[in-house]
Image (cartoon, rainbow, N blue to C red):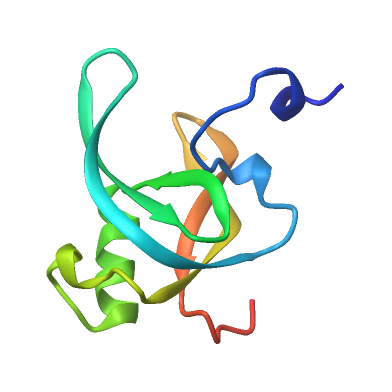
Amino acid sequence: MKFGQVFQSQYFRGADLAEDFVGTITNVGTELVGEKDERRVVSFEESNKKLVLNRTNWNKAADVLGEDDDANWVGRRIRLRRERVPFKGDIVDAVRVDSPESPF
C-alpha cells in the first residue's frame, strides 16, 4: 500500500494529486488543524477533502480569484496541482493553487 492509502487525511496533500483537481469552493472557514493550529480551510463541492491554506496558497487564490476577502470566494473555482518544492532540506510534494483554466 502507498502512504496516502494507509495514512488518509481529510485535507489535500501533494501526494493526493496525481492529477490536477478543479473544484468549486463551498466554504472558507477556520478549523483546528493538528493539535493547536487554527487555520483557514477551503471546502469543495466536488470532494470531501479540504485545502488548508498556507500563506502561499492564500495569496495565489486571492490573485486568481481577484478577491482579497476569502468570504467572497464561495461559488468560485480554483485548480489544485502538485508541485515539488524544497522543505527542511528535502524536496517534497506540495499542493499549489492555480487558475482553473491553467494549462498545468
